Amino acid sequence: MASQAELVKNLRELTGAGVMDCKAALEASTGDVQKAIEFLRTKGLADAAKKAQRTVREGLVGAYIHQGGKIGALVEVDCETDFVARTEGFQQLLKDLTMQVAAANPSYVLREDVPAAVLEKEREIYRQQLADQKKPPHVLDKIVEGKLEKFYAEQCLLDQPFIKDATGKTRVKDLVSQLGAQVGERVVVRRFSRFQVGEGG
Image 1 (cartoon, one colour):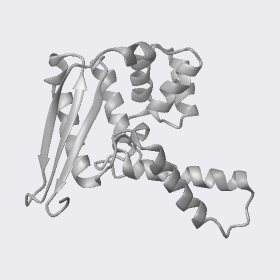
Image 2 (tube, helix red, strand yellow):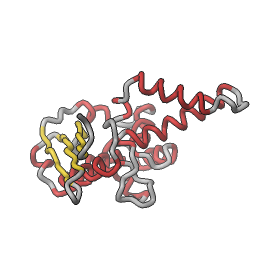
Image 3 (cartoon, helix red, strand yellow):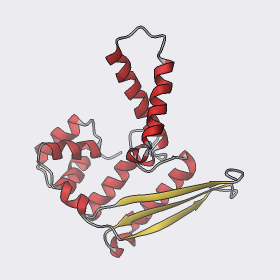
């Protein structure tokens, strides 16, 4: 788990914002780097938007086969230059992501990838689960959204807790953000596939 000082440093490198602004953003987002970036952007303090527009045409595809050969995963991670793709940090991230996909079996890369129909079905299930609770509609809505966050944390790769962090505090997106800060480039998890013997067909 990165220390507060490391998170502030990473956030500064990602956004160009000042130390105190980064500290405030991390406090407001309870240490979530992506939310801190959004916080700074809404306040007009980050130039992360410029980085988000940069093209990522380089990268690598990583593969992982679990012991016994019954489960495998392929993950594509992209960056801006071939030089970064060949760095130890990039290759370690790729290795970690392939193991994450094999172990945690996500369905989507980003929460934005989840189809609206799937989200609505989930919301409907949660509403039915809460049907007998005598609570005001706005409270029920908050409970439903809380359950949806749990859904994202299970089904979306970048929202999943990183399997190597026993505390459960590090999200996969934090690893990607930290590497992007270290190398000074945009790093994007493009897609993945997971294979398990006996599934599909």
